[in-house]
Image (cartoon, rainbow, N blue to C red; front, side, top):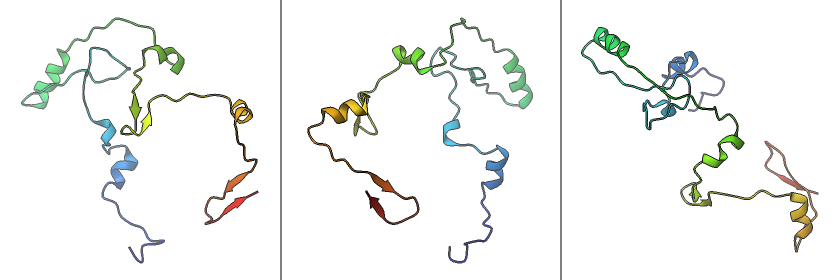
Length: 129
């Protein structure tokens, strides 16, 4: 890419990304993986037809019914029903970590190094006080 610095570079997917027309891997369409509607506007069916008109008509025949449930809008509300994996990141890390109080942990530590570490962004150096 020599000579590209400071020059405009055309991207095939550029216009689609800036107009919202691009498809991303996280947008793969998998309707109703279970029998629960998780959010407003969730796709719940696929219609297959020989023409656009048949598909549009078939879509008008789809009926969805559901029971109203209380929304879960905070982590605390959903924590009891959340899936907790044993390991994450390909089994490298435990699925659950405990949070504590840094001051209590430092006070109880057998060894404590009282120092400050600074990493300056953009520099290839480390400064330790």
